[in-house]
Length: 286
Image 1 (cartoon, rainbow, N blue to C red):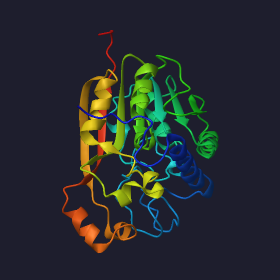
Image 2 (image 1 turned 180 degrees about the vertical axis):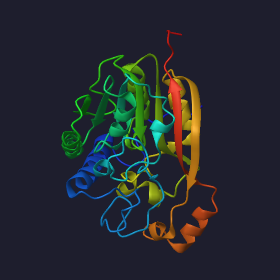
Image 3 (image 1 turned 90 degrees about the vertical axis):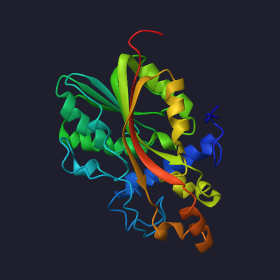
């Protein structure tokens, strides 16, 4: 039986972790820098992946995606969930951890004028930046709400599709997060989420670092445990669309591990993966 993560986290208390994440991502939003996982972060000091490191390991290139707006791309994602989300014109779509609005604006190009896109983020600075971007683009059917994924400011059965991009791994209580996704979806609605999972255990020195926690790695669940949480929330028709392994460069590892520890880590069969997974809320109660 899997041990499902709750508010007891691998690092610190849930509130401490949320404070860390808010501070890190508030700083990214305010300083107009890209995130630690993105392709333009080499000059970002004190970032969540360390200082002046080549961390071009997570974020895909969005520049050719319809609806892309460069001012909203902070390099914080680990996939393109809209690619497999089967979003239709006129639908109501919710983006969890919407940041500066990158995926929200992509979704808006899919739902069109007749649809609606809601972005939820717990960092006030991100909401402010997203609203600034929205004002520049002039979109009237886009809305950004301040709130937490474990207690979404969204009505029950309000949305057709939920997406998220490299955010749920930062949420201390993944069980509650997927229960909330289930609640806000209409019967028959679905989600498509890109996220970080693990196979095998990271070294304790990596898991315990707040910087890596806010940087998409140390907060991740084990792959099988992650899928178990989804099933336990009541979702069906689960499908993994992408499953990609990342290799942390030595430039990052040497900041936290000795040479001997790095060698042990490299030969431990431990892996960090980006997955894009979808699942559906049953149309009728089972």
